[in-house]
Amino acid sequence: MFMQKFMTLALTLLLVCGWASGLAQTLSPAAFISLATKKALEVDSFMTQKGFEKKVFSSNDDFSIVNYSYLAKTDSGAIQRSLHVGWRKKLNILELQYGLWQKKEAVDFIDQLLKQGFTKHTVSTPDIGGNSPSKSVHYQKDRLRIDYEEMDQGEGVKVYIFTIENEHYQP
Image 1 (cartoon, rainbow, N blue to C red):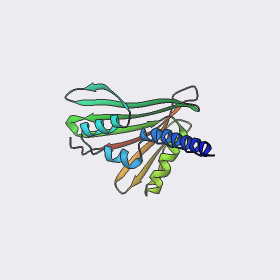
Image 2 (cartoon, helix red, strand yellow):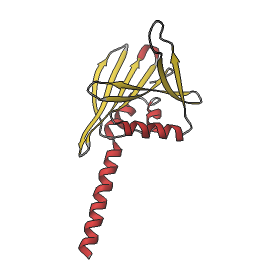
Image 3 (spheres, rainbow, N blue to C red):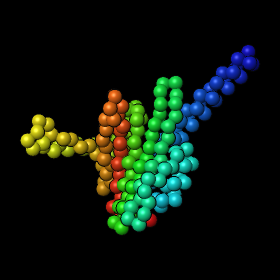
Image 4 (spheres, one colour):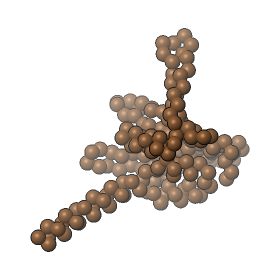
C-alpha cells in the first residue's frame, strides 16, 4: 500500500516537473511584450535562462539580428520555438518575432492575448488584377499591436509568427 502511494506520488511529480520544464521554454504574451522594452543583455539573459540557444546572425553599427531557438523531441513529435530579435540601431527600432511550430501553442497564445484584453483585427487588402485579396491579422490593446501570420514551410509544416515592433527602442 505504501509503495503504491509512493509510486503514484513519484509519477505525479515526474509528470508535473516534465510539464513545467516544457513550459519553461515558452513565452507568455506578457513576457513577449515586456522583451520589446528590455536592453539586449536583459533579453539575452532571460532567453538563455529559459533554455533557448542563441545564434547571432549579424551585428554591426547599423543593425543586429539574433535568434533564440528551442527544439525538443517528445513522444508526440517535436516542439520548436524561436524568438527572432532584429534591431535597426540608427533608427532605434526593435522587432521581435516569436515563432511557434505547433498550432495548439499558437491557439493558446492567442487565447491568452484575448483574455488580457486584446482584440483581433483582420484587414483585407484588394489584390489588384488578382483573384483574391490578401488578409493580415493583428491583435491590439490600446496602442500596443501584435501582428500574426501563419507561414507555410512546405510539406504540411506551418510556423505561427507573432510580431511586435518598438519604434522608440532605447537601448
